Image (cartoon, rainbow over all chains, first blue to last red; front, side, top):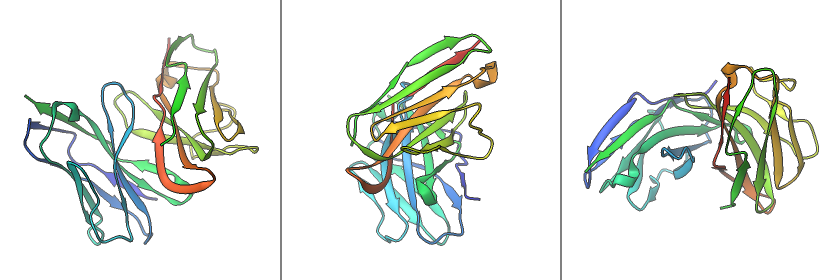
Length: 113
Length: 117
């Protein structure tokens, strides 16, 4: 079974600085999708970024980028120029066959002014 | 992406009762899912809601406890039956694929916060 591990339960960063959230996963599949979602206190799950495993190029969405290391089964999220609105719980997720998502335990990120 | 709404947004229920949660999408979607998020925990998939047929449940979840309907391509319901305090969670629906095409990306509704006394 696929598993997703986020080893950092909590992290904090100063406004305007850069922070990296870690995620590792375990799978025997060769083609899959990885995601980062954020969940602010409103509890809405918001898609941050998506990576297709067959693409070597790391995905980027404005201030958010990933470092995808397929051989190491690592998928970290870098947030540049952190903003107060980035404060949220961040979940790494792996999509299995049938579009079923397996989530990590989450990392609570706090951006301090 | 599609606009997803859930009703109710929150509810407080007595043990032994049942609650039906609705998920409505503003456009036709290929796939709909139901997740549970227990307090302080991550999300766990309950089932895939299949249009016109029985839902596909994940290990640990059964139809008698979580009956699911999906009568069309824009609407689904999840019922939490014979509730106990352990059912207190946030329940979220998600959707994937629009206009009959797979997109391999899920978008979530705002969630329903359920408290069982």
